[in-house]
Amino acid sequence: MELETAISSVDQIKTEPFLQEPKGAKALQARAVIFEGNQKLSVGDLPLIEPSKDDLVVDVHWSGVSTGTERLLWASEMPMFPGLSYPLVPGYEAVGTVRQARGDPSRVGETVFVPGGHCFKGAAGLFGASATRLVVPADRCIPLDHAPCEEDVLLALAATAHHAIQASMPPQLIVGHGVVGRLMARITLALGYDAPTVWEINPDRRLGANYPVLSPDADPRKDYASICDVSGSVQVLDDIIAHSEKGATIVLAGFYSDRPNFAFPAAFMREITLKIAAEWTPEDIGAVQALRVSGALSFDGLVTHARTPGDADAAYRTAFGDPSCLKMVLDWREFHDHAH
Image 1 (cartoon, one colour):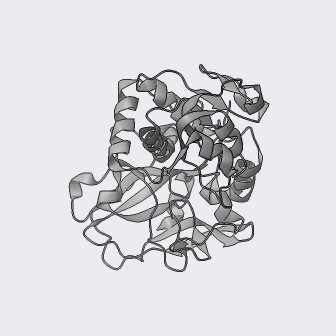
Image 2 (cartoon, rainbow, N blue to C red):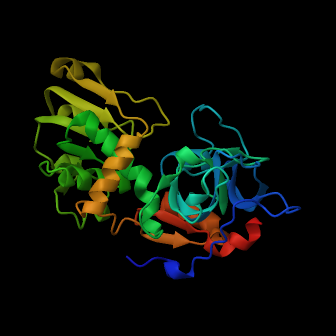
């Protein structure tokens, strides 16, 4: 699918590496997406904290929009969460180039993935990646061995999918065919396991896969032993349990704004085990990077939409409301001059 905004070549990315700000220079600033609550957002300038010798300053080229946690933050529906307050800068998927590295100058110019930052004055960072520039502890910046590209924003979701697979080893059924569901299916195949079945209620999202993607009511199988739910729906557990064998394991890998619930008798009769897969680990990142470098895992076709931050309001509404949008990316490169 063509991107909504033309993305210029990586050769056009302009970075200005330096080891320290010139004497008398203004404090670092960033242009950022700012959630104000109740479906209200703006794009504005925020001062950044002073980087320490253990921090990197990263110029962000692309950031991704999460249709899970960010949708809840945007709509003021996120359950109480550590650090949650408004206004806030959302996002945990950014890729860019190291601009400043006081503690390790060799990292200047390095391409990195950044899972957000708590670096803004005047706004909370939850998780703080949707900005032109970030100040981040060096050990949280994940080196990439290639020039930055927009698909790199998917690294955290791929690691999340890998983490959930480790909890189910491997999934025979995946519930939900959004980006995480697709990555989970691709990683399952890349690891050499049998192709999983995927449930998806949207007919348009069942197309184009090299594994079976079905409506739940079209699946006759009742003996799944390992299931991963990435739908984020609290209503789906009864259907999953009804298609499970005795002793099955169900891994909850979505993020749920309401209490997950299910009818107890069917789960009791099957002695179901419920697991929760949370954040990825460095080992998950390493495993995903290795699969990608080997060619076993591709991110192709998962970034379907891109906008500039000037269209941020429309971008978020498209990401949250258009089923054809698998992944929305914000392209920050033209805004770098505003971050000085």
